[in-house]
Length: 64
Picture 1 (spheres, rainbow, N blue to C red):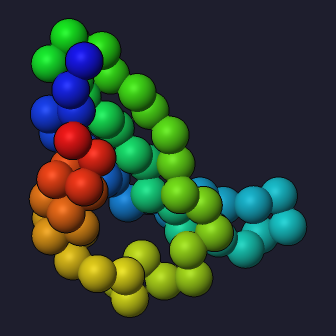
Picture 2 (picture 1 turned 90 degrees about the vertical axis):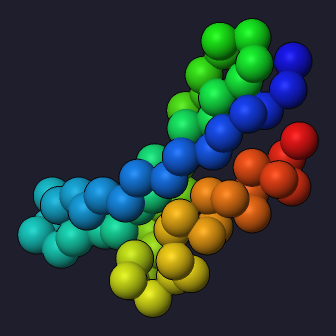
């Protein structure tokens, strides 16, 4: 099984106390049609992290 693609989806969720948390949903696709889903949580500012398409490409290449 080989990783074929990594997709990063930024989201913002509200906590019970009224503040918001920044997260990135991580989807990893394989050549065996298996998809894994995870998340990177509590990112202070999604806009401050590297460009998501570039990061997707770097992760896809690094995880192969």
